[in-house]
Image (cartoon, rainbow, N blue to C red; front, top):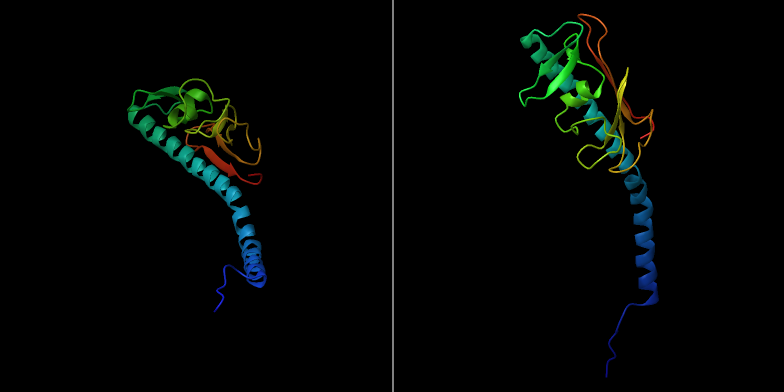
Length: 165
């Protein structure tokens, strides 16, 4: 009578474990950098959003004749945005109000799932990336800076800093 094999031999198991170890050693470094790349992409996306919001407000300011040193522009959704030389200023009533997904009211002090940035007004105004409900990853290296223009004909400066993401 023939005896049938009921499982794997020790050699077969060792070979499978070695193959899985080699695959893990090759694949793991590729996946380790993905979270950093994702944070950099989020910050760069926010930089584009800030620049587009500033351009949108400027177009409305031109139409509404509000390109002086100070003023306000009313967006189509009835949001009022404070402007300097036709662009949003660096305060929560300026560039933060111009962003459609930004929380209404005062500057967000914690990030949320809908808006993963902590806003600090000033010159420059900063949007620091933070995981939802957490603190900023870096106050200087994972941020978008927005500087409003300081004279007629000047444009705002939007800079994304991703060195510490």
